[in-house]
Image (cartoon, rainbow, N blue to C red):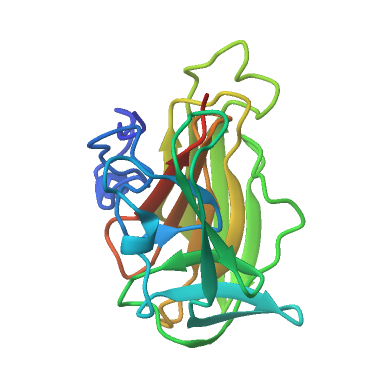
Length: 231
C-alpha cells in the first residue's frame, strides 16, 4: 500500500498526507465513489457504476485547447459478460473529450486555468519548475525511474513532492508498487478556484489497474478512483 510517509521527513512535511486512500476491497471498481473515468467497470454483486454517477456529477473536459468543468454528459453501455473475467460490465461513454468525472463539492462549473508541461512524467532528481499567479511551483521526484527500475525492483518507491516559492507544501504521491506502470500528470490547473494549482494524476500500481487521483489545494486528502481489469 502507498500510505507510508518516509521516516526521514521533517514535521513540516508531515503536515499534509500523501496521495493515497484506504482500500476496503481491492477488487472493487470504485473506492471513494467520487471519481470515475471513461472506462468499462465490472459489476461486482450490486456495485453498478450506473448507480454511482448521475446528473449531479461534473466532468473535466478539453475543448478547443482549453479545459472546462461542466455537467457530466455520457451514456452507459451494458455488456452481459466480459471475456476476461466473465463478469458483466458497464462502460461510461463520454460525449465530450472528458478526462475524469467527479462528485466533489469544491469544484464548480466553468473554464479552468491550466499549466502545460512538456512531459507528463517527472523523473527522479530532475525537478520541474513553473510559475502560476506569481508563485513559483516546483515538483521534485525521488525513487525509481519508470520503465527501467520497476521490473527489477517491483516494490521500489516513487515520491513526488510539491514546493511553492521554495517551501514544502505536501507530498502528492508516495507509492511503493509499480508493475509496468508510471505516475503521470494528466492535468494541472485551478479546479477549486482558490488561486492555487490542483492536480489530476494517473498512478496505477499494476498494468491491469486504472487509478486516478485528484488533489485539491483546499482539501487535506486526495480523491481516488480505481478500476481493475485483470484476468
